Length: 148
Image (cartoon, rainbow, N blue to C red):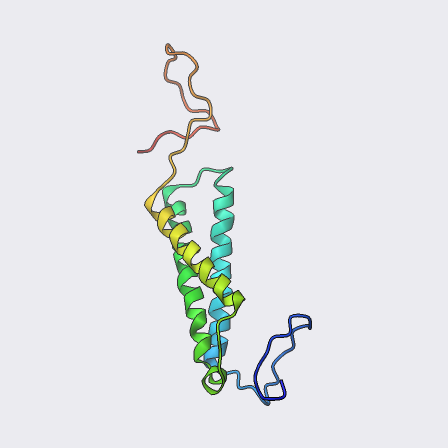
């Protein structure tokens, strides 16, 4: 704006910052990197959770999913270090709706990560015996023996 305040125009395309005017410091670059890594870890975890509806994962893989979600939470929270950039020190920065959505994502990733670490799903037998006189047989290719 003409009075020197920053405003968001939702109807125009994004423009790159003019690096002659805006100082993109190390904190800014750090927050961009950890924000990207958070999405990589969360995306991988979500993909594995989707695959868990088709495949049976081991306990270690299940723990890895939980650790990925908790890592994504920490990395996304570290991305808020952007508020400590030189741009925010010399101007007024506020959290917009995108940052609020990221906070909600952090909360959901954290809850999901804790729940995934606390509970390993008990695999169900694909073909349970139909009669009470059935003898124990080797599990078929689609069944997983109970390991607890």
